[in-house]
Amino acid sequence: MTINEKLSKIQVEFKSKKSRFNSFGKYNFRSAEDILEATKPFLKELNVTITVNEELLTMKPGSCDQPVLKTVATISDGKDSISATAIVGVDTDQKGMQMPQRYGAASSYGKKYALGNLFLIDDTQDSDATNTHGKKTAAKQTMTNESLAKAKEYIAKGGSLEAIKAKYVVSKKHEEMLTL
Image (tube, rainbow, N blue to C red; front, side, top):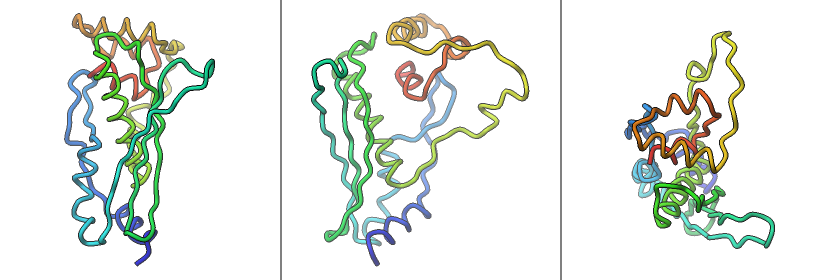
């Protein structure tokens, strides 16, 4: 069996429930650890290994003032390998987090999405979650680092994520940052 066939088998048969719950956002999710745990039965059966490597990318002066992690998830059978990559920025201005937590959050996010890319895991919400059912809504503001910091403080003081979502476009990354 080729490495492509082995990866295809995992992609088709992969099952990992969203067993973790985010109490602020009121949604279930899976982590990189959940994904790796779900792949373990395939490792021995297909005689493959899964590795995840990270690299802190050096920024060119003037290109971006925040560090970026490059995460590569690889499946290998000892002869051939296939990799998938995720690129994640580290928000060094994130309020309410120590620097190791900021890098750890970016690292976790990168691992999850590199593995998701490798195994074709679709983490999008169903259409009912995003469907307005014909109702028009006011235009939402785009989240900036400043508004993200204020939102984090608001939640720490007991505010709701739903109120933030009503005013801002909140990406999955922002939602995870707000609920850590």
